[in-house]
Image 1 (cartoon, rainbow, N blue to C red):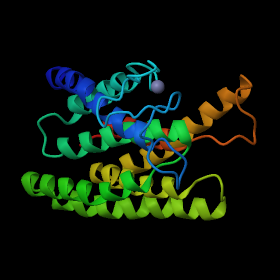
Image 2: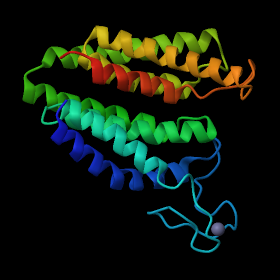
Image 3: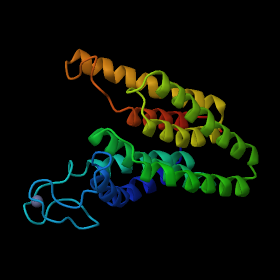
Image 4: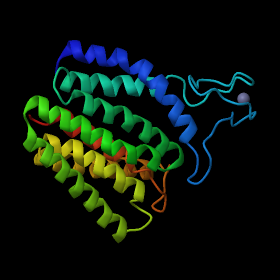
Length: 237
Ligand SMILES: [Zn+2]
């Protein structure tokens, strides 16, 4: 882990989080509903960028600074791990997208196709460029296979247990599989397992503190992303 790169990631994460805030605000709506463009309290129109508080009624949109802080933390860790390497851009892209998706999933329990599907070509191109620069074509092949394997696994789980794992989780799993597969099969297996372990631990803690019942739905996306992040940070190269 490079401390200089990590510090740069922390600094870059704050403005990046402020930009992501706009996407989180607009897309935190139920599926099929139009984008949110007005204040939920007074219905005043909200500007396209810098969605922090309503200019009319003063309502804060989301916890002040939370998204910026999490983005800074995630980018700090990813810069520290991948800084100066050909695959840095791919992992930072997925990290920033992951923060956005996790925030939306926690808010409205969905992972919008409008974010996950266009991310596939972007991530594949970034990894392909990294493979060309670093002469790691084998890693690219493994990434593509990893994406298929993880999306396929989640698809089976979604079919076995409808209502648990959703279609959005399947599409996110393909993206996580691309990134984890790039780093190697042990990293992919560890990342996938960690997602389920983290979700299980959090569910038990919430049930124990009576903030969740056995019938409650819990957003799985943030756990899948956190598991993938931990495995990517720990994975050997
Ligand atoms: Zn307002």
